Length: 479
Image (cartoon, rainbow, N blue to C red):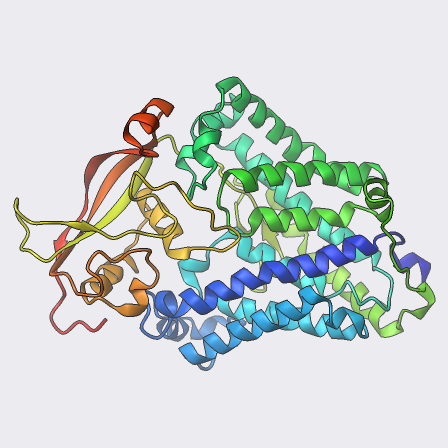
């Protein structure tokens, strides 16, 4: 049926389906590697205890009746396998129900993990990945044309993501309105990458131009995603370019990469041929669309339009929510980031000693993979992989409560708990349990070019206080 099909969007379908499946890969890999130590049976915030407390809330999850680390790992590695098959394009070669089944499985497995992930999974890009994976299930296979309603639902997600982020900035911190936000952002963002030092030292007039361009990209450009071609493709290109700039300057898991992929929902095959004249795309016959597929897609579209009301109303609320889900399936979401900008960076540094606390004690520092620690170490690139413990340590430095998990982390370090130590880059005691640990707060700033040349340090840090005085392993405490 011609009204159901979006003619000229085969390239967009390939990018969306394979790209979204590729975004699921680091998500499931991180779950397999990190979830048991963070949230497993003996984790910092054990999922079985959380499930017991939330038994009456009807949380949609595979683990509702039973959780084990083995089941969690099985689910994560199943997600890795299915994602890889979709990236390779095998399910897409079959009937339309086959990729629908594959993406439906990815959605449910990851939803099961997110819904028991507590604070370690409380990020907006979890909902974005779930919503994107759900919509990708209804793009069909290579045997049927691309459903037009699904493409517009993808554009709606990009609009919510970009426009919501733009509004939260304008309503939030004054530095977005006076265009000085990037005087601070690259230095104080959660996890700088290798280019962040260089971005921070760009001329201030350029920083102001970047902020102005960001406002245009988030508050004006998304509207044109819904316009006819070639306007929609041009708008998508601007979204892709600005998101790529963010990929270059920071580590935000799969947020920016996934936004780039979703923006391709507005890029038609004609725009692709304009850049790649040799590109050719198979066009399925609209008359071959099964009636059941049309019915399922239209029913899903109606449900998504119904759920769209809550995030739409949120956009124009004085108390706009950022990164919130309005249903337990994460299919009605509010997005946004950096409504406020931190002016000074505070890092929590964990240290241990084999001595008794005192002036003569030798304290050694635990090193994390992504968060700043050793001032001589250049920040690394980890995105689209997500280092969840490192991110929570950033929030701790902002003053967020670590009451549930941080004392447990210290006890795990005191016990030299092997799964916990694997979350770190370096254990200064090489597997031996320290006698005492403590947590100190430091202010960090990027070194100046002169300081970098002279002292070979990327960061300058100064003590700013004590978060946790020296503690030792509690008697009878099991790691």
